[in-house]
Length: 318
Image 1 (cartoon, rainbow, N blue to C red):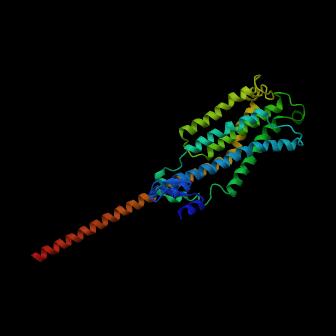
Image 2 (cartoon, rainbow, N blue to C red; image 1 turned 90 degrees about the vertical axis):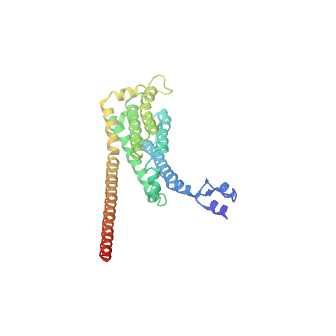
Image 3 (spheres, rainbow, N blue to C red; image 1 turned 90 degrees about the horizontal axis):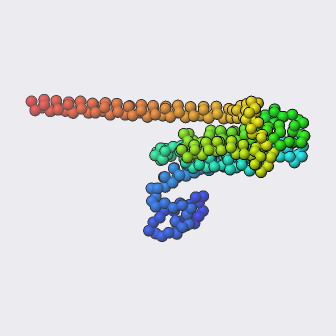
C-alpha cells in the first residue's frame, strides 16, 4: 500500500527498511530513519521553498523591469521597429544578472537548523503559501513595472530631445548615451533589489558573486563602446556617460528613488523583528527567573517543613 500513497502525494518520502525497497524506489526522496523527517521538512524543505519562491519572483521581476523599456519606447515611437537598447546590451543582461542570485540563495541562512527544529512555526510560510501566491507575485510585478518605467523614462526623456530620439540615431550619439544610462540604472536597481530580498549577512560566496557581477559590468560596457565591439551603436558612449555629471546624477539618484519605499519597508521590518526577538528573549529570561524563584521558595518551604518535623520529633522524644 505504501507505493500508491507515495506516488499520490505532492512529495513522496520513503523510509529505507527491511520490508523491501519498493517504497524507496517510488519516492521522490528517501531517508534512512523516520527521525530524519524533521530535518528534511523543517530545515531542507523550508529553505527550498523560500529559495525557489524568491528565485522565481526575482527572475521574472528582472526580465519585466527591463522589458518595460521596450514597451514605453515602442509606444512613444509609434511602433516603428527601433530597439530601445543595442543588441549586445540585451545579450549580457541575463548572464550578468543570473549568477549571483543562484549562489546567494543556494548558500544563504535565515535560521540555524537547531532553531528551525525547535520552532516548527517557522515552517508555516510553506503550507500558507506566503512567499509565492498571486498577491506576492503581483507585488513583484508592480515594482518591476514602476522601476522599469522610471529607469527608462528619466534618462531618455530627460537627457534627449525629440529630434534626437526621432532622427537618425548616430553611433554613440545622445540617444544611445541615454539608452546606456537607462540600462545601467536597471542593472543597479536589479542588484540592489537582490540585496534587499536576500538574507543578511550574505555568505562569502554569495557576497563575492554579487561584487563580481557589479564590478564586471564596467569593463564589459567599456569594451562594447570601443572600436573592437561587434556593433558600434555604443561607440564611445560609456566613456561620455561616465564623464557627464548629468548622466552620472541619473545613475546615482534614480535607483535610490526607485528603491526608497522598499528600503524603508525592509528597515522597518528588520527593526520590528529585532525588537520582537529582544522581547521574546526578555520573556524567556523573566519566565526562567520566576521559575528559579518559585523553586527556591518551594525548597525553602520544604526545608522549614522538615525542620518543624525534626523539632516536633525532638519534643516527642523529650
